[in-house]
Amino acid sequence: MNSEYFQLFAIPIFAVLVMAGLCGLLGPFVLLKRLAFLTDTIAHACIFGIALGISLQIAPYWTLLPFAAFLGWILSRASRHSGEGLSNLTAVAFSLFLGLGTLILSYRGIAGQEMVHILFGDVLWIRSRDLLLLLFAVLIIVPFFVFKFKAVTLALVSRDLALTSGIHVDKLNDLFLVLVAVVLALCTKIVGVLLVSSLVVLPAFLASSFSHSFRQQLLLSISIAIGGSLVGLALSFSKDLPIGPSISSVLGTALLIANFAQVISKKIRSLT
Amino acid sequence: MDSKTDKLLTLENIAVGHSERLLFSNVSIEFKIGEWVAIVGPNGSGKSTFLKTLAGTLNPRTGRRTAHFTSAGYVPQRFIVSAASSLTVKEFLELKPSTLDYKSGTISNELIQEMGIGDFLDRPLRILSGGQTQRVLLTFACLGNPRILFLDEALEGIDLTAKGQIIAFLQRERESRKLTIIEVTHDLAGVTTHAERVILVSEGVLFDGSPHDENFHDCIHSIYGKKIRLECAPEFLR
Image (tube, rainbow over all chains, first blue to last red; front, side, top):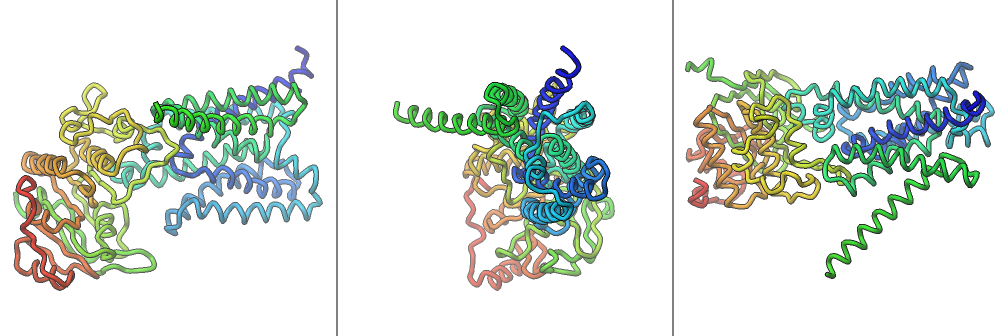
C-alpha cells in the first residue's frame, strides 16, 4: 500500500468507521432524551461556526468546536431556566444559526458547490488531522459514557428522579450536551450535515426494533452504524456515488425494510 | 426523641410557583420523621409544584428549604419514556445509585414481590401499562431504603389488590424504620384511611391537620362545593 493510496482511501474509510461507531454510541442516549431533532439542529447550526472561521480567515475548527460547545451549554441551561422544552429551543437555534451562517457565507462569496461541500461533505477530503481529532474525541467520549453510564442514563430518563437520587443532574446534562455538540460538530466538519444526522439517529432507531435491553440497543446501534457505513462505502466505490448520501440511503432503507418486515410479521402472527 | 430532632423537612416563608404564576406565598411548614402526609386540593391548585418544592426538584421562589435527609424517593406525576428506547425495567431499577437493597448485584426479591413487578422485570419500560409503570416507579423510589418518599398520585392506575398490598408495605416500612411519606392524591377517602395528616391547598395552604378533623370536612365542602363521604374506602385499604 503506497502512501498516496493510504492518504486517499485508508484514512477516510477508517475515519468514517470511527465516526460511525461514535455516532452509533451517542444515538441511543439522544433518543432516550427524545431529542432526535437535536442532531439536525447542531449539525446545521455548525454552518455558523464554520462561517465564522472562514470570515476570520482561520482554520474553521478553531471557531467551530468552541461554538458547538457554547451551543450545547446554552441549550442545556436555557431549557432548564426558561422552562421551555429542549426540543423547542433546538428548533429556534436551528433557524437562527443556519440563517446567520448562510448569510455570512453568502457575504464572503461562498455558494454553490462550496455550500454543497459544507452541507454534504466529502469523505475523500478527510486527512490524518481529522482522524486524529476523531480519535481524541473517542478517548473522551467513551470513558465518559462507561464511567458515568448509570448517572447519565438516569439523568436522560428523568431529571427529577436523578435529582432525588442524589445525582448532580444539571451539571451532567450540561456536560452531556456539550460533548454531544462537540462530537457532532467535529463529524459535520468532516463529512457534512446529512451523514452526521443519519449516523446518530437511524442506527439507534433500527436497533430499538431488535433489542431487548438498552445495553443491547447500544451495541446493536454501534454495529449497525459501522455495518451500514461499510455497505454504503462499498456501494459508493462500486457505483461511483457520493459516500455520505450512499451511507444515509443504506441506513434509511434498512430502517424502512425492518419496520415493514415487523408490521408484516405481526399481521401474520395475528392471523395464525 | 425531642421535637427538634424529630424534624425531617422544614420550609420557611416560601413562595411556590412558576415565573408566570405564583401559586402561594409565605408558607412555613415542617414535616416530622415517620409521618404519612397527604396533600389534597383541586386541579391546578399547585399540589405537584408544592411537592416538587418539598422534594427539592424545584427551587422555591423565595424562602428557605431545610432537609435533614440525604436519601429520598420520588414518584413523578408524569413519566414518559422514549418509544425508541429499549431500556428494561431491571436496567432502569439498576440506575439508582448506592441502593442498599442490592444483594450480589441483584435487586431485593422482597421489594420486587411487594410491588408485584417480578413478571415484567425484563420488559422494556416503553411497553408497560400505566399501572405497571407506577409500580416500577414506586419500586425505584423505595430502592436504597430512603428516609422519605414523595409520591405524586403514585397509586393512581394501580388495581385495587395491588394498591392494598403496596399501602400495607408502605405502612410496615413506616412503622419499622420510621419512613416519612408525603403524597399528593385525589383519593379523599383513602386519605382518611392511611394518612395521619392532611394538607389542603388551593391558592395557599387552607388546612393542615388530621383528616378526621371536622374543619377538614368543612374546608373540603367549601372547595368542592358538596359533601363528600370520606370514610368509604374499602376495608382492605384501611
